[in-house]
Image: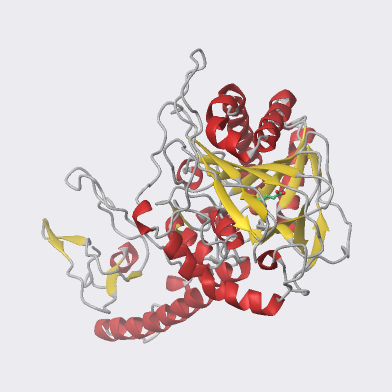
Length: 534
Ligand SMILES: O=C(O)CCC(=O)C(=O)O
Ligand SMILES: [Fe+2]
């Protein structure tokens, strides 16, 4: 359902500004005007994209979408329109599905067909044409906010002694963060080390920007309001905070310190500035509809007006305003990587009729081509992988298609059934093969059962991305398998080779075949040396 984000959309980026020089626009963007009944709605939010260590080089967003637009609204003259994928794109589009002129620069047609069925249904269900809130912003009675059942508060964690690295204070913080992630998937942090001045300046910049009249914003904002120093300082602070938090999270999980760095947080950091104006009837709609965040972690700074709520054990709870706190929201990837030990939290933002509200959400997300999977170190016989491994890009496509619905997404990416069925099949096949091998050797039927195959069966899931120069490296170096037998299933791309009488030979892919590889133990058993390992 759409939300009452009666703001505007500017899609922007941090360009290569140099501090000493008065620079051309540092945020390029686009403001959309929408006429709705007699009032004018302005749908706004700003995306800023930061690539660290590369402030001068900005990721080129795709702009291949203009051609798809049929009826472009006349727009003010603006800097070149840009498109950046933001985790919230789908919500923005959802809000504005019925205002067909919303965006000339997004993949409108594609998004329209994606959301139109949903909207038709929702509109039919709602039917509140006389409300002060535009009909397409009205939620069904079941979906609207009710009195909060619980006010049990979300943990506020003091990071003051996080940097001591050892000792009670530090260990206690690690524990608190772990517990908060396990129970809530969200917590607030204070004494986080982020410069308070930078935070309040950043909120001021956003407020100042959104308080400008639409036309003035459209023409001037990129020069007058971006305040590159503030934005850049904020970005640097967020980057530092991310590293600190990641260190504490990985320590709590028992993973290497830098496990969440690299590909898992490899997409350029995006900050999304939200401006929510007062709403004539907050009982009917939301600033932001229920969703889970798509990435690993979101760092949220809210101004002095509260509004964030989280869903915890079926109940909505308010996240209290804590001065100078930053809210850490776990996105869906955190749940996948931690194999469900840490939760990602569903949340929403409620409206109010008196004040406008500002929030700044900074998203840390995996690179598009990053293979996300439960961390191997967290898996064992008792903790099988609960989720499939997948490319983040595939997840994101599903995220958009499922409107950030955590349940649907979890169903799609969970592994339980497939893994279990595969394991049962492998177990059965092993028995069959063992029977045939022992028969060939003239041994008792069950000779290879018991201790000889007594370790819990383990399946490794390997993914080999394309390699820019296959002549220089191997997917996997020469080795023999340590166990008795390996049952290998390969996808539709061949690659396995074996060393046979001093020569490497390819193993051809045969549809639906399973490759049986004898491990070292098979040879070591001195079964008349009839079997060779490969
Ligand atoms: O404005 C808020 O409090 C929530 C923002 C949010 O959930 C998001 O940007 O993903
Ligand atoms: Fe969110």
